[in-house]
Image (tube, rainbow, N blue to C red; front, side, top):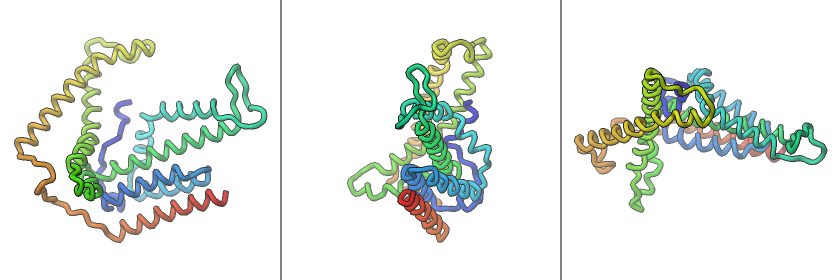
Length: 268
């Protein structure tokens, strides 16, 4: 399961999505999230699905990566679907009635709708880290939040912390895998027994993981201090972010999709 977590990973490429300005990508991902929550029916989600499918095709990210991004959140998706299936009621007789559980047609529709919304949400937000390196992402966040510098908000430090957090997700996953393999080699049973037994078995994994995480954070802070890191003050950039016609075209296309979803809500 841990090997299937792709959050925070960057896959280098030369596609049109990779070449886009990272500031526009952050904004457009936010707009896509708005599109998903504005959509009120399956037609709206269908428009969002067609749009994100087209974007993934342009990015060159394989379908296997999409499935890997969904696998870790599968329990959350199922849990959300079950809740909507049970608690969403409708007028008329239920389709299924068992004990205190009644399932209505509206509950089934809402359950499927919410599942698709979460799936598209995860897929859309994963594309940002798939096609944007952590360093470029830091520069983009700092640029977008730059107006806050007027009120002495630590924009660069905030952007740096967010990017470091994303960058170390794959590292922590790899560290967890190593600890689990080491514990299994010592005879630890991590995959058997009930929920309580498995939770207790995680203790010898979490403790060294936290210790290693704090040690790694301390080493990173020491390395930054040794290199005279002073934050954003006087810092220059190797790559200067610059908007191109491709970015404005992608923005116009995304806004058109948002408009189509709004019109769909009005018509249907």
